Image 1: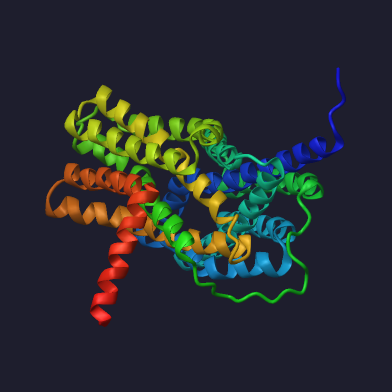
Image 2: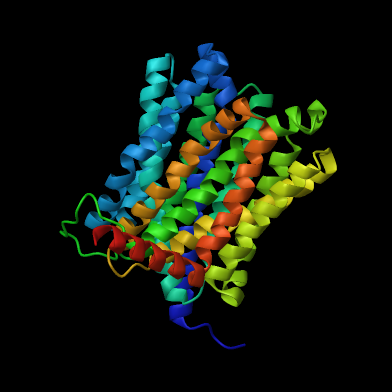
Length: 399
């Protein structure tokens, strides 16, 4: 049996270490999500107040977006990934101490900031590993994050079933994450930037990054809709029995996680643009099935298809952004993530607003149309024609 080259062994070590960081970060976030009902009950929060409190987490993420790219570029992703993940799990434990609404809001801001900084740093590491491999492997990294969600949900169910308090639960997870960081940090890629570099806090995205950001924006609107409204859709539109209300969300999550482990091979065969176009078509098709045939079996199939459609978009967009030749990988990822994250923020409220004015099926139809928009944006020839027409119109106005 031929010996494996040392460089190949090293690359595998880098890949395993970064994959573990994705898993640990996903474990941290999903652990918090699994105990939200427990904390709501402990603080006696109404659904409306809980919704307002939970907004602190994405607010913290938004605050940290420009800072994330600056820190990664200034100090290197290796150092920032470890430090930010330590801060992330520490703020998770602080959530277990929350004894007032004000304390919970403040710590959720910190939790959101630490989560975003670690996200940009870990994805920057992933871009570096992908470059060493010379082929697409980014989606599989995000698959580890999704797999961590299932793991945390299972652990959370056991903890709740045995009456384990959130503080004790969070402390156990913190110990696991710290141990994981201690092991993985030795095998991360060396810093990709020179220490002492002084990057700008804000970097203006070029046309390519704007295009990637808009694709991420469209996809994250869909993700936000699935996370927040799938259960409500099954209850109000599909009229599912209470035991089947979560079936659509489960189907979506299963195929999203599975799709991320398959996407790298797909993009190697089809290329980036065609894979994104296929993703957009799957999103539109799956939602159309759920809208046109609002019955439990068909709606599950529809959400099943949507999961595959969503699965590869953000990982592939991040992979492309990290290869930017105009700004550093960390700054490019932060720029694209900033644009995309707005979709995650405005998607759920937009669905609620449209549903209030018309119906939930119309809201989901809009998301299906957004899937078609992704197909059109990823079409390079169409994109160029639209850009040329826009430039001509702009020139006519100036003349």
